[in-house]
Length: 209
Image (cartoon, rainbow, N blue to C red; front, side):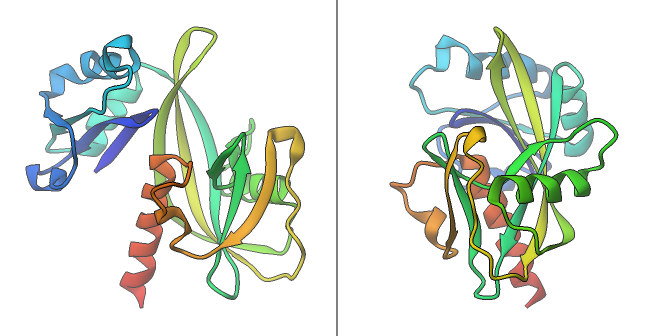
């Protein structure tokens, strides 16, 4: 399943109708309605309305790539950093709880960018990076144009005892180690895409246990 978010709503691509079970405010669409539906999500038509559009595809990966090809896609990378107490490193950016991430620089690969961004945004440097968790997608406006950001996420482990330091110039005002249920708080101000990648990471960890 792939979800392309715009604010709290999403365009969802999956290979089976059963994958959409439990998703609220869902409208099924055909694969020829992807762009039309996404334009609804980013327009005034969806302003204040909770809605998700779902399409069933035999090849969700190919459908996703065909969709992304019509937009300017910004590549980014970040990390889910765990400490020895199995706590997750979280940041407060512009008043929203998030995970450390940032744009991939020219001639930089995903893993190097993910590690660099985590160290820059949190002030920690004794970090080991391991396997990739997956990617998240969200759209946003920049100079009256819609851009899509594809963020690649990696497992990381902090082996040091240093105190995290927020990168204030990036709008980060707090960095904390939090318990795994921190992002399950319905009152927490965060992003659905962040909750999704955390759940995907936990599913992978539990599958290995």
